[in-house]
Length: 552
Image (tube, rainbow, N blue to C red; front, side):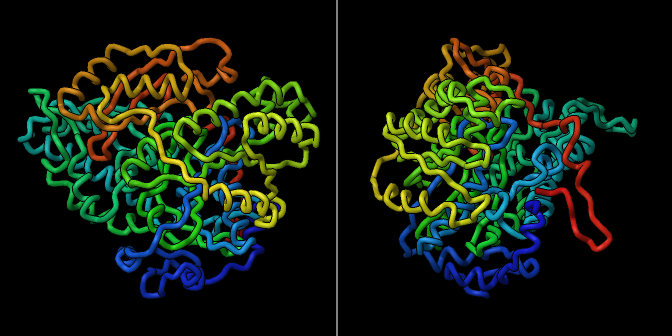
């Protein structure tokens, strides 16, 4: 059966029953049908004195076109913990419509480990990303409206972009204001995908409504003729934007196919944004359960680094254990084995490709993390290949757990669940890769050299100018969020093995004063993705009975 058929044939529990499992009363949830709910803002106050549970972060080796199943493993671990009698909960990101209709076709797990209702989560869900899109574009319209009616603020340079939650490369560079109406000035503009919007980051990094409003007001929308920043609050925009986001800031409660509670909230990408679910969702989950399983986007060089250096710093939390997801196929792919031959046993490919996994392990240990590797098992994996990976990891004193969640559900993840219960008790202090008081370039260098393995960092003239400007404006002590390809430690997506010395090229640097970090654009990274030659949208349909097909 396909993922959607497995999900459709599983009887879900009513969402109020799922809420009761983690101590949330019916009065504290707002129903979105039978199987989805928003958790009210009042729940935090009721749980304030409760001790936090253990936090388990799931990350992965560098992604491949084959898919590693990070979300699948996250769900399997949460279900596996429940199978061994532990009180667990998931805290995941929301899927974006971009990849749903682009390459992925869905982002809610697979096989017997899925979050549900999967079609609704993958599509409009509770409208959070639509609200973020609306708030983003409201600000854009207020900017242009202000200019139309006289430009009292002397806006000369606009840095704020419109957004849409779809992959559309045609919107990367556009011209607006072509109606030839009086006072409308044509200009070049750009669109971002909604999950790259600063508002997505702000929602994920705000801990309450008043903080959300303050951060929205701190967004820099442009500069005047004196090169001074103009903020969203100067346009009196933050109030209306907060109104649009008043429900979007509330975490969403759903369930796995095995009825494990799951909080799904926020959805920034890790290759172009900070890649973590909301602080509200994670902190709430830590109060509701003994074990929280959360996920950071793409490989550990992106999602996990930003989770630790940005989110953990801001939220004052730390993971008690980190799971690195790998597959036999992915390891061989990083060893230079062609996709067409990836299912054939190849120990040499394992020997070469496992260095990608080793690099991620070594990186995470620099943060002081307790690390375990989850091998997402496929039926084409051979015993010899798995044994070789286990042997190699034993030499690095790292545990391996073979996870069969896709086929067996939580039962296929009891081994890793048992290992994690022991691992999270090993106390280790969190370390950061850089100090916030360092210069912007020093912070970039620390991440590029210590995490990516780059030899040197090269800066464009524009990047140098913006670094100087950001520093002079007083924002130099913010954390950095590097946007680069997810497929390689380098900024070149084709340099998979990273055998030789390489440099990282910083093309530009952008200040996100509302979110509270500096985005560093490395290589040819795009903040508006394009669709593949054959997008998943071509296979998504609905039958005469209203059943959706093609989402997985």
